[in-house]
Length: 411
Ligand SMILES: Cc1cc2nc3c(=O)[nH]c(=O)nc-3n(C[C@H](O)[C@H](O)[C@H](O)COP(=O)(O)OP(=O)(O)OC[C@H]3O[C@@H](n4cnc5c(N)ncnc54)[C@H](O)[C@@H]3O)c2cc1C
Image (cartoon, rainbow, N blue to C red; front, top):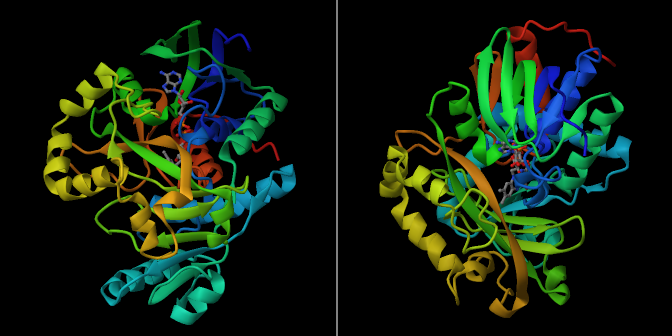
């Protein structure tokens, strides 16, 4: 475990994939500056980065012109190149978005329009017959096929970023939960569990805790992070052949979630999920985990009630997915009819750091903000991992504009 520096040029808080990608990019551009990563946990990638479905998205869903659209398309390309260069397994197994009934076709049309506008490589519409050629066990009236959508282990990518940082002379210190942030005397004083680090500038990439650190640094409390637990089940080994790549439903355009889907994982498992249930903690990996501060934070946020009023029907549906004898498998059986309740086993959960506005809006796009001498990632849900290298460039560009740093590139 590296000793945290007392002084540095740039501090990056959070060693998930975004903090690590950002520290790596800052070091590439400013190799002569000292970069210190501060992470609360005992190792990197312990939260969202280590608890997701491992999909390399291609940018089908996102509003053209949004940061998500731009950074996902660029980020996916860069990520494949990075994995090739570093020998990290990544597989382009392709994805189908299946419309199961005619009333879903207008939404499929809209996704096709968005995908084309965003420049999603190889995206095309397929009919019911071709859909079955691509995924023999899937059924629907039409689908979109994204052949470049792929899979990777994001914890492994994050570990490679951490190696790059160490090689470039940066320091990653774990066990450094940040407890105070004070801009003073041309520095940001960052108090943490192992002392204090005084940085010329700082970037905060704290995932589910990003709102707390932004407020601690003097930032706006809006938006607040409201955690959503996303649980997955696994297909039994003998049923994995039901899915060649990935099969997704047409999502509800009102929600930033993609619906219950089937995803092959790079280790060969096939995931079914996720659910999207309001969680009792920002690290609610088990259903019973409740953290009073996290619950209070959700309950005292006016946006939580506005969101609940708008989406209560969806909430009930999500609850039905996860209750014993629930409708989770039935949701996927709409487009893979052979699936049976007994085909699933075990599973795991992740927690989405979903920013919710005071007005109850589920913030869809990536959000970045400033406080004195600092930048903050305020909303980076999926496809945040896919986009990590492009997000890091975006942050480094912003740092070059607002931090008054030299801008020579290392490569
Ligand atoms: C269920 C689920 C499925 C997903 N699937 C996909 C997918 O298939 N493809 C995709 O591209 N994206 C996916 N995502 C999104 C993706 O995982 C995230 O966008 C990405 O991991 C965000 O990275 P991060 O570094 O911001 O957050 P995190 O990985 O959560 O890292 C934040 C870090 O900050 C640290 N931290 C917090 N507070 C402090 C503090 N006070 N002091 C010090 N350190 C602190 C935490 O310990 C943590 O290590 C999924 C997310 C979830 C939850």
